[in-house]
Length: 84
Image: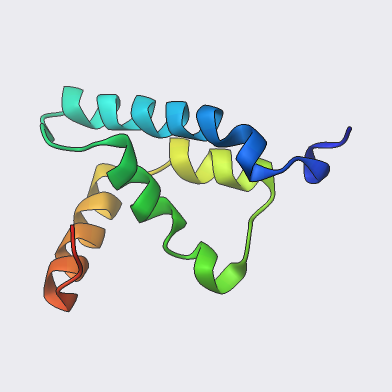
């Protein structure tokens, strides 16, 4: 089976683990309250417009997320009044 044929539901545990890993990295950098769910919401915000990305892009988006990008996301979300 090619990776493009994979369903995200089949990979949800793996994606969750990647997001949890990134959240742990941010906690080590001093961002105490970051969760895997927070990471996923930040990374996946653009997927509503683009649709489901290829698996390699999804993995790259999670693991290459920078703390500054995450903080910008939080700031913009606060201005928009989104539920964090």
